[in-house]
Length: 135
Image (cartoon, rainbow, N blue to C red; front, side, top):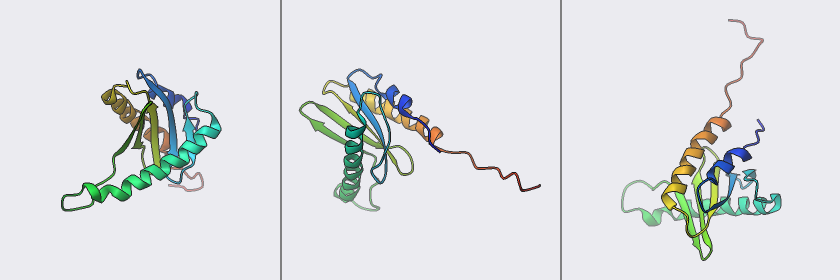
């Protein structure tokens, strides 16, 4: 399966102050990028995002009060010039979006969750039917 999902990532950028979006595989490979992100830069950021989610999962116990290990949901990093949001986009994929400091954080988070739902449908291939099997 080889779909161009870039157009879907651009929908996350409809939120005012959102800047860039990438879809990353769990092993750090770039799966898709929004139109304003260069390929080389996107590859570098994809590898970093994979590492970031791995680090986030590793420190999950820091949030545990008792019981089972907490599940990672989102990583949010603040910089002087903006934010980076990182969330799970299904099995083995992550969605990262950058935004300016003035972004509506609730709106961008909501839009990212909507996009993950759409990406999940696009990334899920229907089961293959075998023509050589007779009922």
